[in-house]
Image (cartoon, rainbow, N blue to C red; front, side, top):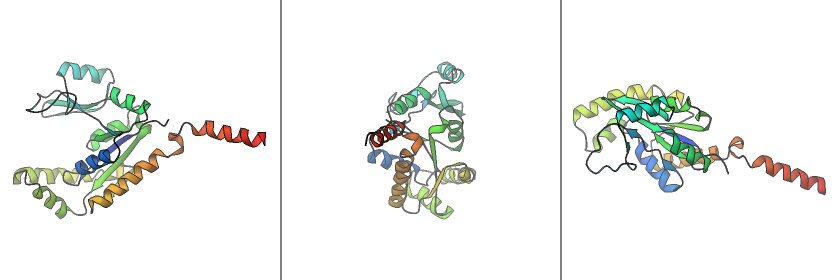
Length: 210
C-alpha cells in the first residue's frame, strides 16, 4: 500500500479553490479534508469535528509546543491550525489529505516532518478582471470586502512560484481534469509505491527459475 499524500491547494479568493476541492473529493471519496482546529467560539450551526475542532487557547498552545500542529496562525486574536495526528493516520491507511490553506500555511506544511509527501498546487485566475467578476458574482460581499479580497490577492499571487504545480482556472471543468491528472501521476511515482521492490524481486526470481 502506498503512503497517503498531503495535497495543498491554494489560490486567491475567487479563483475556484473551494469548488475544485469539493469536486475532487466527490471524484474520490477516499480523499479526506483536513479539518482545522481553532480557538474561536463556534458559530450557529457549526459542529465540532466537522467544521472545526474547537479547543481552548491553552490546549491549542500545548499542541503547538508538542509539535502536534502541521501549520498554524493567529488571525484576529484566534488560533487556527492543522492537527498532525489525523493526517498521519490517513497516510498510514494510504489515504490522501486535502488542505485548503494560504501560502503561509502551505509553506509550514512543506517544511514539516511530512514535507516529503506534499504535493502543492496553486490556482490562478485567467485575469484580475475575471477574478473581480467572480467575487462580485457571488453576491455575498460588500464592495469594501471585495476590495479587501482583491488587495490581498496580489500578495497571494506573488507566491505562485513556490508551488509544485500552477493551474490557470479559465474553465472549471478543464482545471478539474488537470487536477485529477496531477493526483493520479503523483500517486504513481516510484517512491510512493513501496511494494514495487518486492514485485521486482519476485520477477527476478521467476527469471532465475526459467
